[in-house]
Length: 418
Image (cartoon, rainbow, N blue to C red):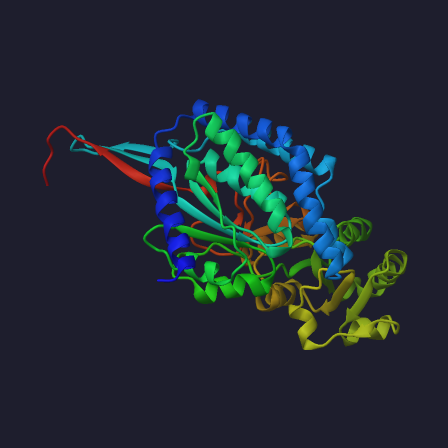
């Protein structure tokens, strides 16, 4: 076994031991520790900024894109937000120990279904150093131990943030190994982590499609994930077109580089003649490149013809695929064929159409007359999220505190035998 494998194995064993300690931590005890973590981030603000400057200097030397550099940057406002986020998690309800249901059987057995921690969670993420704090405190709040492995671009920033969290946590009574950061950028560490079934209960990758595919291909530990966000907006035959235009603008333009922005717009053929010119005006105003089907291009000659690849594309940019469809069923078929099961919306005043869309679209979040940009833990009232899952087992959609738990059955008897 190599030195690196020994290091990762030791981290797994330490995390497992810490998770068994955390089982007995009360809600109030955890909240005191979380507030101490927030205090430590404040006290080590200057160190975090100094370490972040090292990452930014390296990013500029490597010629990274401005958007990447922006995601890496930790200014005072973002550190303030990180600290506030930790304090907000401390105020959230703790799902651990929550009773889901209780039944008393005819023979007198009392059966309860209760939320319990997953155990040890491994988070593998890219770019944004604030994920270090988000992931660590959400896991701790739910009595899970966590192993963090960030991207090389934020290596120094991640170490500084994790150090502050550990200092604040340990000072208030947290097991030192409840939060651990892998301090190497060697990819072999990831391959080792995702195969430690005896120590790690779940892996959550956060980043681009290539990262997530690499984790899934190597993992024997269960993975919670979404590959990409190919989100759709469908404008129905009975849609308010002004409302449709407003939602299209928000869902595409507010933040085009996020996973809950729409990538494809579907338009009922009865609305195409009126709505497509409205869309063209919006595209011209906002700088959106349109890629359309034959019917779209016939109405908008300036539109670039779409290829088969465009229907599956996650552009993460001001590019929008547009398709005119025959009816609602054709729209649903398109979404279920080309979508990524993330977030999809219909604009309609027809209740029957809305209900059919809600029932038949196979996605984690399905909307009627609202923007897909709401697929977010905070927007759903969860307070925070670990990420968004498009899987169907265990967790689906935004993953908040409840999604970082599983459950167990506790059965109390008075001597019953079967």
